[in-house]
Image 1: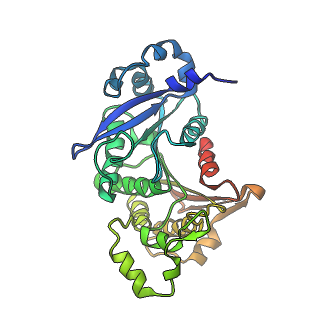
Image 2: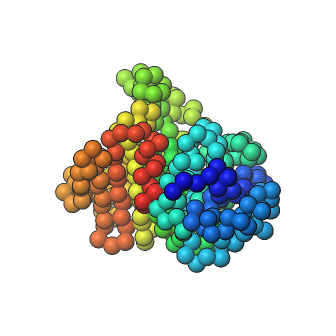
Length: 323
């Protein structure tokens, strides 16, 4: 089926989200395509509504009033805006998992796009918490119908947000999906290379004192590994999925490998070695599709990791359409 450009345009509804520290975030609500087709005539009539009028729109009612609606909150990477490049393809891929039920909420962090403010680690976490709070308090979507999805920098935001809610309010979400995650910023900078050719700080590996110097002077540390461990330990139910591509030359897939073991280890009060995890984990070879590994603590905490062979972050992101 081929959809017109108008359908795609009016499938997106802009909105604003206010943060506790008085920033205003610009965001998109992407209506599931099946819901759009059903309500196309009315949604087209609302095309001139401003972001501040979103709660008066039919799109908002379709999201908030349908007990079967599911909401994926998408946290994008460190460049561009919600409309950047292939991000719109990712939104459509996410929604395709259930085109009559899955809504997508994508926002620009403070200092990005049309959002106010200046970005830093605590500010971006505050933005993520505000987006989830908006979904629960304004759109009235319960956490068991919300999935957090992060990509690149967004994985650090999503992990921090998931850890925040379980630590502060014992709130657990339907799932957390991290695409091209990294353990923490100091470690990332020692392994990061632009397009696989231009290393940033990897020449400093033989010099631990210089490594510590740069690490100590980083403003934003983004300790995702520690936050994932805390999130898993404090949760009664976990559905954590890590996705990475082997040909991601910017962020090595080894980061997701490390995070998988960190999360699995956190399910045990006594701790687990990588050998103990390997002896019990489920593994399936997907051929040219890569591999899938999963760990279950025997209860309600499941961690899975999918390493795809090709496609970089763009195509890895498209996998979550069936998540």
